[in-house]
Structures are given as C-alpha cells and as structure tokens.
Image 1 (cartoon, helix red, strand yellow):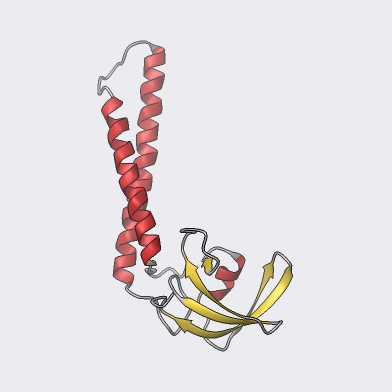
Image 2 (tube, rainbow, N blue to C red; image 1 turned 120 degrees about the vertical axis):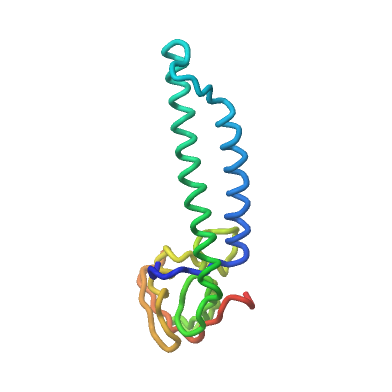
Length: 157
C-alpha cells in the first residue's frame, strides 16, 4: 500500500478479529496433539508429528500477521480525506458520465458492490490520488478512465 500505517474499515477489523479467533482455536487444537517427545514412535508417527509442527508454524505466522495488521490499523486512525487510502470512500465520474461511490478496502469482506480492494486495478490507481485527478486503469471491458470527484473517510459508507 503506501508504506505508512493503513487504516482498516470496521467490517475489515471484524473479519480479521473473527479469523484470529478461529486461528487461535485451531492452533490450540493442533498444539494439543503434539507429543513433545524428542523421538515419537515409528517413522509414520514422526512424519505426522512433523506435519502438525509445520501446521502450527503456519498458524503462528498468520496469527502474528493479523495481530500486526490490527495494531497498525489502530495506530493509523481514520483515513485521510485529502488523499485516497485504505478505508476511504471515493466518488468517481467515469468517461460515460456515470458517477459511483466506492469504498477502498484491504480485503473482500463480503459481497459488497461498493467495495474495491486496494490491490484491484481500480484500487491500485486510486491509492494516493486527490480529488480532481483522473485515473486510467484496465477494466474487464477495456481501458477506462475516471475522475476523482471527492474523498471521504469511509464513516458514511
């Protein structure tokens, strides 16, 4: 994204907190199956133990990543209304004169027609832009341009 701490929407925070709770539950279940013995039984038991230890490492990595993202979001505060960032609502006017308001999200939280993820073609060109700027990006129907009419902090979205 921009390299600075990025805000996160309430829905995004909720989704990450839910995932974190699920991962912690799964981690506890996997950790309970590890024997802790230096040399578990036969080679099949050893392979199973190694597979569970690898799974535990993957869970720990994801848990650490989510915890860090939630801390970063808390430090970032509300999105700027001066420049498009994660959490911003952006009103656009397309080349065909249609206007649309979208919300820039970090992840697809749900089926939300107003959500544009920050790593999508439109999201990528909007990040860091200001009201009055024109962006051009590759849409499913071909090259598209849009004028950034206004930027909000996402609180009304």
